[in-house]
Amino acid sequence: MHDENAKVSKGIGIKGRRVIAYTFLIIISFLCLFWFYVLFINATRSHSELTKGFTALPSSHLWENWTNLVNGTLPVWSGLFNSLLISTLSAVLCTYFSTMTAYAIHAYEFKLKKFMFTFILMIMMIPTQVTALGFLQLVSNMKLEDSFIPLIVPAIAAPVTFFYMKQYMESSLPLSLVEAARIDGSGEFRTFNTIIIPLMKPAIAVQAIFTFVSNWNNYFTPALILHDDSKKTLPILIAQLRAADWLKFDMGQVYVMIAFSIFPVIIVYLFLSKFIVQGVAMGSVKG
Image 1: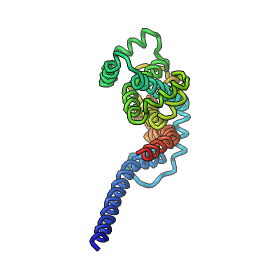
Image 2: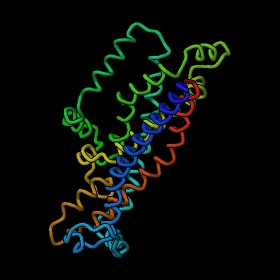
Image 3: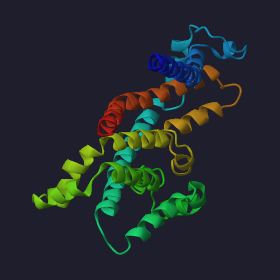
Image 4: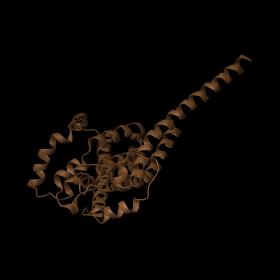
């Protein structure tokens, strides 16, 4: 009888914890998604309606705001293409070469191994703003202003992504697997591309999302390098739209452009999220 009461009380305790956990998750999800709802609602309202205050109901000016935005002076479509190009190439280069660097330090033994790892972590602590002036002078001396190269190539050196990949390898990549591949006659690049990369898919997906979003939202560096309107990215164009004088300022267009700039990020997340879920499932099975 005592054992049955203990089981019942234990079951009630587990259910209670689940109820509390789901309640907090629902509240947090609501707080996160509410601002997206506000954004899309405001995108359907005109500038005069937005000045009157917030309302939870959509209006009928979405197409009007979109038409005014597309037919305006800002090159929205070229800004979308520029942002997609920079963010996609940066994400691919960053994840691939960061994974390769982490694999080299994880799988090989050499004299400066610990120093290289520490040195990379030291670089991670340096803010972007500190090196911005020297970087801008270098770009100017190399005649690379109004070019995407200074925004894409530096993504290869990403200390934060390297550190994440290194930590993931230490927990999920046994060196015995690499040794077995070498014994079977597999070359180093073949081992990396056909064995390591598939095993690292969950980590690569996570870092690809982070890298894509950070480059997509990056305003500071592109604003220093890109001057031609046809080369500018969406964050710069959004800033220009918000900085318009009061005669041309239209808050409805601003909200439509922000909503328009969010969709590619959502699509990338939905495409890569399945790899994250697979990684969590694999981890639970291993555990």
